[in-house]
Length: 157
Image (cartoon, rainbow, N blue to C red):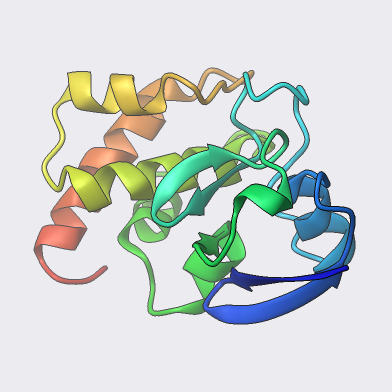
């Protein structure tokens, strides 16, 4: 039975079983490759996307649980006017290997939507579910602070 999802501000219809994980629908059916498969149990955060503005693990979220709530992926963040998180990530050269970055960026964007001026503790709490095998945590924290500055100024560079 076809399922219509709101992905990156557009309706997208897919014909998949209702228990299909969102990650595979995004990657295999909608050709959105930014969110990555990491662990398959929702522990690493590489598959994180925003569902109604909140970070969720796409590898463990069945499409039947989504309903009409909007999904935003890294591709969607990049489509619009330059997002402050993306600008800060680039400015501070955050990624090393880059595998986890789509999930890191999604979680950072959600944090800044709810906490425009986060403390280090706020950042550590919000990002604790996103693992980075390369250990770029100091640059991630710095980039979130920079994104908050950019957001407060109403734009990017």
